[in-house]
Length: 374
Image 1 (cartoon, rainbow, N blue to C red):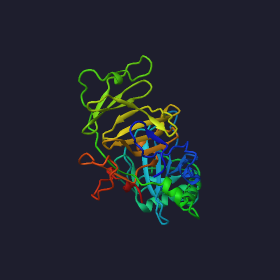
Image 2 (spheres, one colour):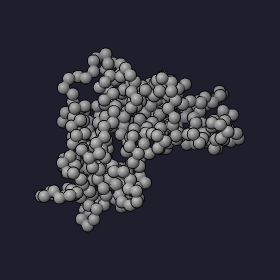
Image 3 (spheres, rainbow, N blue to C red):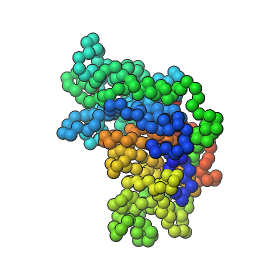
Image 4 (cartoon, rainbow, N blue to C red):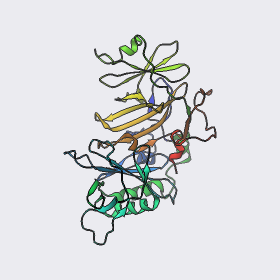
């Protein structure tokens, strides 16, 4: 719930997304929360609600041999909130590695630590994104060990299975403590009112691609820069009166909103200064949301991933993730730096332009970001 620094031009999308180049007037405390902090292989990232995440993963090996463990630690803002731990196992290309863990897998220290016991991982069933959540007792023990041990690995009793990130995790957790529980309120009432607004959205599900019959509109056909021609564009129905065209171009996919009976409207992602933020991929995912990827230094395995839902009159920002370390980590594991107070899919087109307060009905985890909060 922070202030807007990106918006979808022409669509009145008004939902905020924090980025590293923060708005100059943003309070210092919010700029600090938005800033990623690195320590070795570890990265701490908080958001404006003071929900903090730490992700750790080693760089892909040059010989492409070996499995890497992605360690993800989350903690809510409550004084007594226990950290939550998830682990995922990747190959050098960023794909989920197999086989799945079994009861013999342990966390062992690297180097000689006299009297140190190996720790069970305590992992549950695989989750939708391919990660495994550790039970609370195992999570506390593993996080405490990684704060002390100079190095660690996942071992199955016979050999090393996966590498564990290294670095000063203890420093980042102490920094997390300071950000989540400052001694005095770091924001004035006026700053809270201005910068920490509530956002509740009801969005329409985007339909699967429609077959493109005949030629696409001229604006879509001529979407690419220079003389390049767009590949066959994708067409999506995103509501009772609008379609979405996405043209694949060498410089990145181009997006057009097409109201029924009207002309296609090309739009870009812009910051508050009106500067276009170049994106690479743009498309409608299987969840019916518009997804954009903003690469960092032309690398698509780092940067921003942003998702929007169509409210019937505008695109509402549903999720922003950022990870500036190009280490072949799937998007689903990137830290979340913004999401609305709540959102859900509409059973019928919204009648109020999309800014609907929560209806009170039960929502699934995938449709309600409040489930991400402690």
